[in-house]
Image (tube, rainbow over all chains, first blue to last red; front, side, top):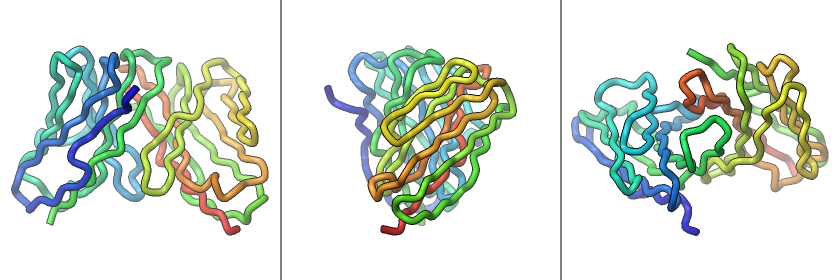
Length: 114
Length: 110
């Protein structure tokens, strides 16, 4: 079956703009999590959605938001972009939001803010 | 909140040498997961450990979960160039979100 699909793969935006990233989880998976990856900072948790509800939120400013649709697809939005938002944004899907389930990652969206 | 620390941050070895990365949590973990991210790729699940003191092997990779369920290690015997990448440990905190360590980036001299 198809893996986790993230679009777009690459994006260049200007400071102050906003951006929307999309994630389509594996068919049947209901949990979607978002991570920001920067060199030296590892994978920083942004938020997690399960059945259209935000279950968890990381320590990011309110400029970062997300949502999940009834088909489990998820979007994350970053408003008023800053240079420091340049990163690889990874989406991970899980069958359920359970402690024993593994996360399947997409290829990521590489965002560059200039 | 829960913190997961991983050491070392970088490790460079000669092909054929062994490699170990260590993971420590500030709180007791219900389980620990390990992921590998190849250069330019995305994290891929390797294994999950659940029981205290658990040891699992995958060919040349040996994973251990500490008795107190607060630390874990990944050991690779006789590294090969295909082992290059960043290895992450991850544990779920009380709110069930998956928290990742900083990762250990392994490079290998052939």
